[in-house]
Length: 68
Image 1 (cartoon, helix red, strand yellow):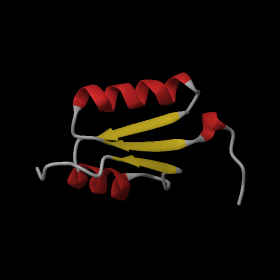
Image 2 (tube, rainbow, N blue to C red; image 1 turned 30 degrees about the horizontal axis):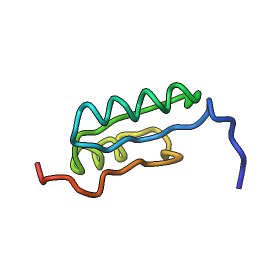
Image 3 (cartoon, rainbow, N blue to C red; image 1 turned 90 degrees about the vertical axis):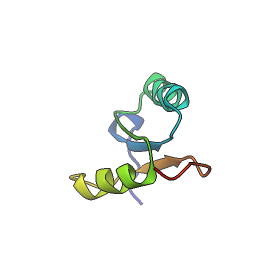
């Protein structure tokens, strides 16, 4: 597996709570993650994954989300 510098990482944040989603994104930015994409629910996340030019390196996923 190729090692990437943190600034080259692409992370998808999936969280229904806007405050938590923004906090997670801010924390990722503060440690230097280069590309952060957020989604408010599973359907939006699937769309973002399908529309992405390349695969995400990591996905932070809230496992307790209401269906929307």
